[in-house]
Length: 243
Image (cartoon, rainbow, N blue to C red; front, side, top):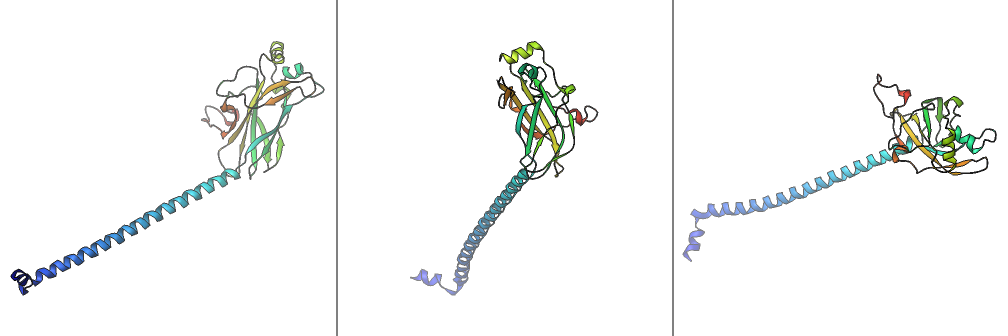
């Protein structure tokens, strides 16, 4: 057992102290690392929770803004029949009554609107033009939940179809389509927005109703609401209504 006596001799006592200190230091280091790891995990969880809360708050804000901005929808689209027109008379020079409603929570300030009639196939991207393009609407504010009927289109802005085209519409050889948009602003000073619409004659009647109008027969670009596209001032003025 001499080696044990030598190991615990006074000369080797410092080595045992250093070994003990090493063990204690290792234990302390292990505990410290565990605490640091736990604190790091708590910090990461806190950051993730904060990010989730921020994303939820942004989503709620976006939803609130989306509900607050004015949202236009058509609630009536029909024939303007002045004095018992026949179907042939109407299709020769169609005029329609359009009533919209604001489903947002703030007023919609109408700026101008356009309506086009055609009995030809629609291109994928709408081309707004013709005599009823860019009709100015002055001092019109559609309040939340309120309807508004667009003013009648003047006769000189109404398109005229030929007898051949009228007969083709009557015989269902072609379809009459009315499309356009309403440009409006809001209290948030956003860029002008345009509400686009497109209605197609589906059925023709022998009474004063003359015909009915249906959505869903046009490419997607003819419907919905988007920001009004702005071009350079020297290329085209806003009231000229670029596509």
